[in-house]
View 1 (spheres, rainbow, N blue to C red):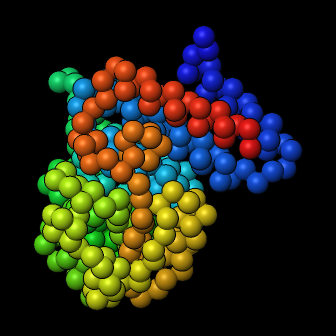
View 2: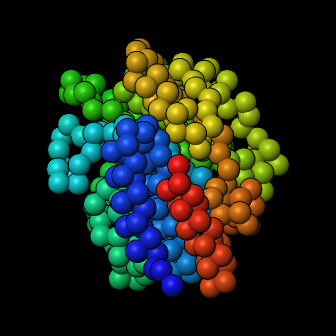
Length: 302
């Protein structure tokens, strides 16, 4: 039986061959990385026997694009004052952030299996004091965007060019603090701020319409003087176009509302609210990893 590690190396060899053939490989490479991120997410929560796989899987594509294409970040210069900042406001999907940080060499990939262990630096929510690459500790929903707004304002005050990105959950935006931060950002015309809402339509207690509907999300951000873009969260071309448009927008912050699939990439987790905060058992883990492995192999054929 071929190990996952051997197949991963094989995937990259195929990628290099395809690059030499002159194919458009940017999107394909991103899809391959995002698939590895999803594998790591499943590995993390299975090892921890707890965590939040559903929302982690739904943001995997956006985080992959941010860290591998959009943001000015470098593990060898993690304290560079001119680096871009990312704040995971929906901090419970830390497995996705850790997986991307591992792919970017901020943390060793083998450490991902220590998620939520008592002696691990990879806590259930991001911790900036102990985890390389984490810009802001997260826990209570709604607080991350406020911190991101403060970072964006500080860049303006210091005449710095770095940009600030933050990802919120659609359930999270039921918090009032989110809209206080949005009002401030719009008023201050923080065009170096990009707020990304992961609109997978599910939160811990059910659909967001059932719990406390924030719809229409785009119109609410427009009311707070944001430039708003609606996209498919799993289409890298749309992600690229939206972030390019955000960078070109002047005089106002941007909100990207991305329609996503909770549990994306693992069939039995997709659009299933029970996977908001549940870890797969051994059999489910095996099934999920086999599905993701097949998805990776299919990408190698393109």
